[in-house]
Image 1 (cartoon, rainbow, N blue to C red):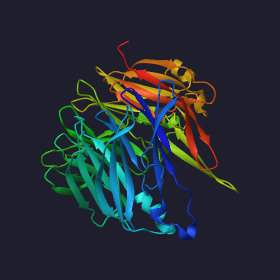
Image 2: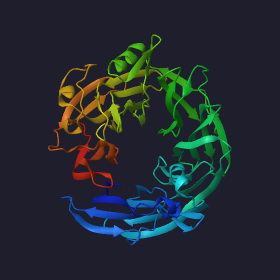
Image 3: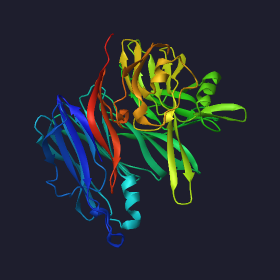
Image 4: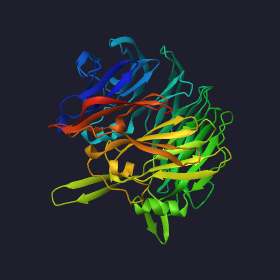
Length: 476
């Protein structure tokens, strides 16, 4: 597992190198170990320097590490067992110019029973590290969560650790963290899912800068509708929004939006923005919606948020689904990715819906990149050249192979009208494609996109990178 990122003028690839598989009868959680390797590349993508954070001992683990950039440096969060029942979370700060370690700190420790083979997967899937930078980019929230507690702290660019807290989770069935947010006043917000009476429920946890916590059940305010996964968004006037798909009897019916007061931490009444009927029919025509009992609804969309200069709130995402085919010898999973769906909500809460028609096999080339320019939303995405060059057709040419996709851009005005759509890059050639799912945001208007392909060996699937493509949004 690994990816490549750019920090300042340096290209860094990180790699998590797991140790050998364990024998089932002796398998233990504390034997799930990995090493972390960093590679620095020149502009021709030739490796010029290597760093092993574990001195090639592969003694880190067992839970998945995290990598992020902050203050012009690369940061690596990773776990390490100190005895049979205690795990520590460490943070190492690396200078990207020469891969020197500038600082290493222990973030916190927690108890974790050293379980055997039948509980290893459950333990790994239940324990995660989460990172969220404040809107002003001065602080980063680090959290480790599982079904019993959320342990958190806030760090600055000098790795000073403040606002440590441990929040015990009440007895909630299948509790899981969905998203988190840190505001500019060091208040922490978490959204979570759980089960109650065999039904999915949503909630919000707040942990303020004085250490006061609240668990808030989230409701849409409409008994016929429920919210999907809750996400956070911060705006220029320091408001904190909560948004999500909402659904009724079947699939999704629209976008939900509300605010949470940063002083009282009360959630305002939710506003529901239903998809228009003709919009749902258009999406369904591309197989990303369904008609049940004479009514259309839409598959789940993982929306991203951007704010325009005039205060318009924009949301863009891609509906997707998986088809499972069971055969005599194997089971096959086929992923599909649909149109780029957008919602524009004006400061007086009037909604406009738009889309870029698209239908393709779901791959690492299906993700979209978003930027704002003045009062425009800019969407960079991969699609068949025929679709980009044609009129806005609700029956787009379907693509099965990612290497057949070119890179395109669409520009929306603040009312959701597409004012420009054009190709910006040809197919990379060979079996390579634009790996938009691993793109990196360099600035508010620039991205770095790996070009490569998926490979497989005897042990794992992995991406083989050939080059990096830069995309910059300019006035022309």
